[in-house]
Amino acid sequence: MRRAMAEAEVGDDWYGDDPTVNRLQERAAEITGTEAAVFVPTGTMANQIGLRLHWHGNGHLVAAEATAHVATTEVMTSAVLSGIAYRTVVAPNGWLTAELAERLLEPDTYYDVEVVDLLAVENTAGAAGGTVMPVEEMRRIRKVAERAGIPLHLDGARIFNAAAAAGAEVTEWTRESDTVMFCVSKGLGAPIGSLLCGPSEAIREARRLKILYGGGWRQAGVVAAAGLVALEEGPGRLREDHARARRLAEGLAEAFPGSVEPGRVETNMVFVDTSVLGLEAIEAARRLKAEGVGCTPVPPRVRMVTHVGISDRDVEEALAAWRRVAAR
Image 1 (tube, rainbow, N blue to C red):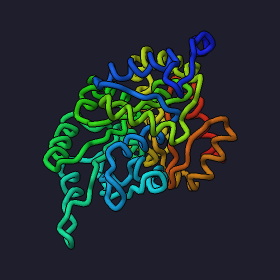
Image 2 (cartoon, rainbow, N blue to C red):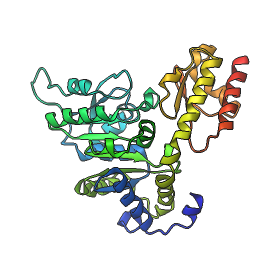
Image 3 (cartoon, one colour):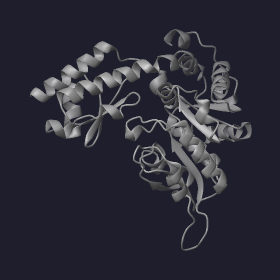
Image 4 (cartoon, helix red, strand yellow):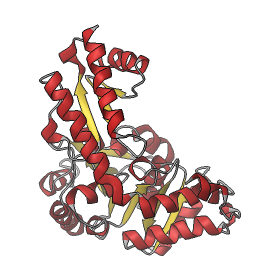
């Protein structure tokens, strides 16, 4: 990736004449089975543009699972940028089901009017530990959205992880959505960047919104070059990350019974309940950092993620660090 970045042919992405960015966008559209794509710096920007494309003015709602990224981390961003609010419901596995989607789309009981303009789903479900929405469930949700006459946006930040875990093509999910975003960072291993994909006319407007939101990043071919490498080489090695995550989960469950549910580790995330060690999540993360292990506090748990930079040896070193923290 670093070699590709150093050798990248660049232009000015503001004007659409960076050839490396254009190749990445074309490749992203091809892989997702969509008409066009736009390259933006972050997953949040990709989601926010994707949501805004379907929006019909303030005062209505987006339906989503309660722990979805758009309805939690991005909730204030949605309000500020687009006047968007959310109607949510908690799903046991973190991903929305067709039955729950139907419940969210019910009319306002007092005014007897439709109040939801858009249905947003996430795959994998990050807050639930990277769980995978089955393809059949996505198809059923699509039918719910069609019956309601509303569009469907897919937050597929880690959709390639879902595909690797399910042994399916990403198009099995993307063909059921009106717009989809995914990250070339995260599992695919690029240093930065996400893509929003969809119909040509929608992506034409998305390019305008990208500039409006401050995403005109000039000679972006330098980072798009890494994204191209990520798209070609990243998907094929994701199962390695998943296997390492399972090894980490099994090791932690063995050392600290009740801290991890290995059966819920479907992709590359491991959530650890630190109360088993008598530690608050933030304190556990601080102590692990002192041991050279990074993790994210999500009280009462910490989240650990395997990726292209993590080896089998790193997993064993992480387990040893956990044991040292517990011993103290």
